[in-house]
Length: 218
Image 1: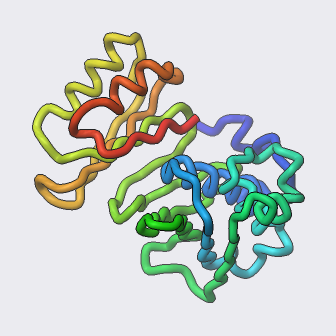
Image 2: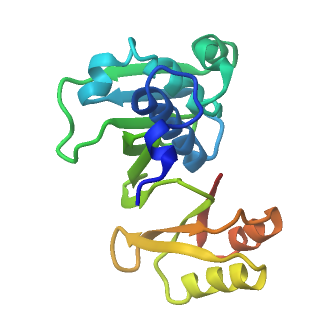
């Protein structure tokens, strides 16, 4: 089924729904997944992103997204200046070809004393995105609605405890997937919700012993 919004595109600062709005959303969701202040963000651009990133304003859109601005924020045009004022270094590395995985963009966040955090994904048109690798774990995140992304230990009962908290607080799960690096290693669960989880619900999940990290994407 195709929505009218897939045809007319998102409300955005232009010119391109895929190279501006989609780029902005990729960077913004990646920053939410990182969830920490950062000193430097590096964007590796592939394919058409690399070829047109200045002309389409992709560079400004990416910088704005990393700073938390949405695709309709008029400050996008001043994102590079705002980044400098906040002490954030923004680096662009256009590549000639796509990666073997077909990524449009790899975003790397760096902060003093922390290991680099890498997110990879694509702009798929109409401002929509797909993120398929987060901090070394292959996954799938569309961020089309309220989404919880949990990094956790691959142990028995983790998912049931998370879903029990959501059920108790009246939050319905639309879709869910879990991916892991190895049996018994780190895992990532992506829960798309019918409505936003309240702060108290999110904190109860975050407090579970097995949860390493929780990103609440809105």
